[in-house]
Image 1 (cartoon, rainbow, N blue to C red):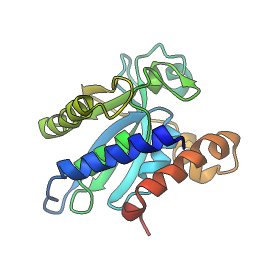
Image 2: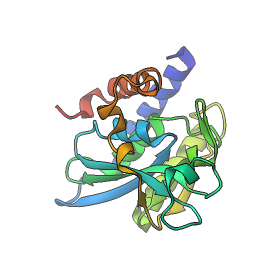
Image 3: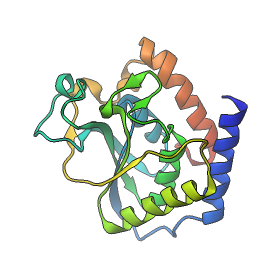
Image 4: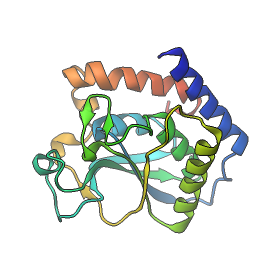
Length: 204
């Protein structure tokens, strides 16, 4: 990780600590939906966090019903490669998931992450209720005001509508195919960075 990138990550972590996270609620399973580029990578990262029960790769934010990967990958349906996170809010809060969201990808890249290019790879938060919208907007505004990133944040903040589960072979892709080239050279290095940043919040 480059020095400048590391500095930005550490600054963002410090800001989250300064802003604080909301107190954990009574026992309850909640859902969050994010897009951080390729859903294989997002699923692999968020599955590591304590309190996360299940992460499902899929498609959301588009114009047609029941989209398939072959069509979404053309970038013509409006869908983002996204992932649903079912989590225990008594163990991990939505604010903490937002922290993982912002620190697990580059929210200043428009319609791409790394070599994955297209609207399907956009950065997005799909809020399920007004509380999630308020928290996401809060951090987006704070990060913009504090100039945490060297470029403007382009993360889309959109109301969740419907989530279409991706094909079976996309689920837990990294876990099933750790030696596949994309997993070895793209996901694994990113996952190691993620584990280092969130070492105190990982499952045992």
